Image (cartoon, rainbow, N blue to C red):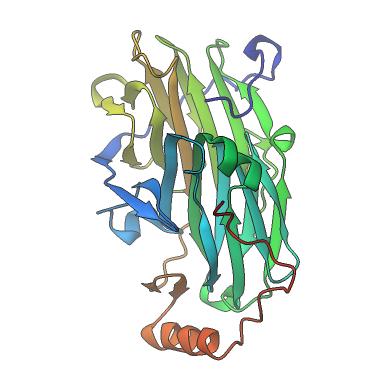
Length: 322
């Protein structure tokens, strides 16, 4: 799991924090499914009430899978309206293009933001070279709701390289914190969303523990990318393992501890942390449309059907099928 790494002894350290540690309200295991043209995903939010997720709507762990030659798959051209997507490529490569001029290559620790807003068409697909060679593919795609007064804003795109990520170390140097978006302990990540939030990828070495300050106005979710450990402190610590999501209660900090012995497939506990300011509006989702009511979804379907989202560019990339 390469993502972006660094010598934790040379990085800025988190401040020592006290205050109330958040406890897990629930820990669930995400079911497996297939997305797009058939790449495997874990549905991280399955079964969680939207009120616990707000402002987030949907999240898939893409992979982790090692493809043979000619096996890598992506998504064909498809629409979105009413929300933002956040894609984080931990390992592997995706090409992106949309019909508003956005696009680029997302690989090894890079992130992208796409504000669908009023409507956008886009594609995410592995490049031809990766399809031919095969290889490891692992990432996260997160859907972030837009409040009602911003659902019809103009589409936008941010392509952020792995080197843009803000890197921090735990107080004892035993953990690496990659701030991907928002702010953690006064350190700001590169991604900027319409909704106040924080996103981080935390690596906790075996036997180590980290206490991460967290905005008490935000909710908090922790998805385990790999490894085994606990979340919470003392008698309130709950065991967590790969492909599980912990929904956390109120508090000022998040405590993660890695088991002293990890499995053969990972050297550490890897956790994707996210939280944001709840929007507290009604959400009606149908496929790639996230609106406030059924009429908004029906209008989105009609607008897409009649070409009001625009057209696929004539020189557009397309899935490579060999």
